[in-house]
Image 1: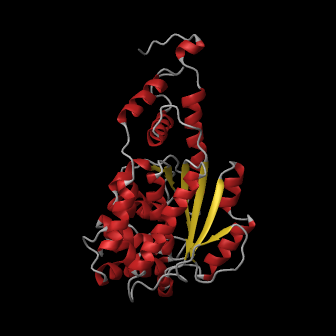
Image 2: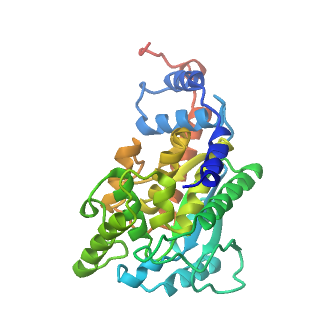
Image 3: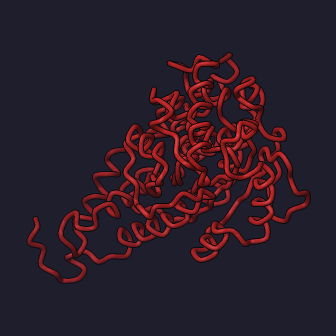
Length: 357
């Protein structure tokens, strides 16, 4: 990895503000004074503390969320690792544009802004309303033949994501959920996870869109071969991302870095977005406290990433859709945590005796 990519990450990380532990103590004291037994709201209290800590205030503004769905295709689908052809990526982006996908339904119900980005769809459908076109290329290359991305293209994709996050935060967004769409991206995420966590492919490869046993074995073989071909053992996150990642993954790495730079909470969805978070933390450890795990996916690689990052998921609903669907649900809990912190009465306000002191 040359100095250009390293400098990009260093510049972004250098602008990530350190978090003040005094704010965490103040917020926890406020929560302990609410009309409830101490700690009785469990992870909601932890979430309220983290949200305030990231925002830099013990009395933060109410969450004003957005979900960013990055869409891109993967050349490795030529190896038969997915139950669906690459054309489905573009078709699903059209479905997002028309409002018919699960993520549309979920974001409408909680009034969350949805930003869909074509960062590298192989067969795009032109002139889709509401789709932000930031195309790097028509999908990545087959990473069994060559690196998935050139370094220049990877840097461009990261920059697209970081610029988008900064733009959203400047417009008042203070919580960003991560979403993705890309046939073949569970294979890319599995390869990233295996390399960065030094795990065999069998320990991180799941069935993705619902592949059969033969396709799962092909996926495992592809991940093992890619790790050997590109000599990824001990490689840093940027090199792993370039060799076996995708444009939507690189874009999400940029979103994470840009959001942290703007003191914005990042709600990580499932396996694919967690792989992007794994890369982001590998190359810029300062972003770790900005991450919230929305849910526990049924993908086995997701568990490995959450354990490595020390993230405890808010929900366990056996989701495996992607699109940011789990993040959309978790944003309801983020709002609930804020309401508890700001709107719930204290013992003195309510005239209730506090025997927990």
